Image (tube, one colour):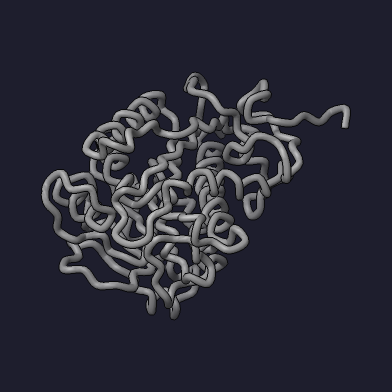
Amino acid sequence: MANKTIDHAITATSLKSAATDPTHAGILSFMRRKYTKSLEGVDAVVWGIPFDAATSNRPGARFGPQAIRRASAIFDNDPQYPFDRDLFEDMATIDYGDCLLDYGNHAATPETIRAGAETILASGAFLLTLGGDHFVTLPLLRAHAAVHGPLSLVQFDAHQDTWADEKGRIDHGSFVGRAAREGLIDTASSIQLGIRTHAPEDCGIRILYGYDIEEMSAGEIAAVILRHVGDRPAYLTFDIDCLDPAYAPGTGTPVAGGPSSAKILSVIRKLGALTIKGADVVEVAPAYDHADITAIAGSTIAMYMLGLHAEQLAERRG
């Protein structure tokens, strides 16, 4: 016990240091990363957006960041499977805490999120965001596109989210359509995976429906993504309802007939060749969860996203 510490989220002396907290104790940040608003020397930032006022069915995703952080405590500091490395040994990573939103003024929410993301991206750090409902991806795309130009959207979801909407409407079912109309995404190189509903338009985005995912192997799915996106800058967004409710019951709009967490994690693991400029995990609503099933899936997906970035960072640095 002499070399062990606790509450690494606040006691860490290095942004690359390993935590030794027991998985059942200690202050909860994402994967025990240090809580700080300082962006100096940071390679990757984890940020929470506790917002669910745009939901069309069951609310509760405002508690998603808390649940994902709590579930991430199970990741100890041995090499992380399947990356076979300490993700943070050469990737300075922080937990930036949550976006402060005025629950009584939703009209201000998009700009608050965009401005917060803009501050983080200005540091040069990679941003991984924990939602929140899927509306939060729209202001995140605005911030990322301002830096990188139109992005190829790689969207894991049961819904297309291309419903038409009025300007200024706060709605998690229309963010893709708005992003397309605003020129934030390159629709010709964007792709949606796991779709199990219909919307009035597809905006020219390629779709792999739920039945496609069921019949394809993880390798085949990943190959389609890599060919379709190519070397364009990409934004990876993961709505947890992409997974079948058996693997993610804790979400606002569950749809039967989705893939398993094992299959989709295998797909994500094979996306190392994508030029990922930003990512998020959204729609975890822990009030409908059982035994943290959904939160565990969400935190694992988020960890995989950081793992891909850690590998790419190591490759760039030689």
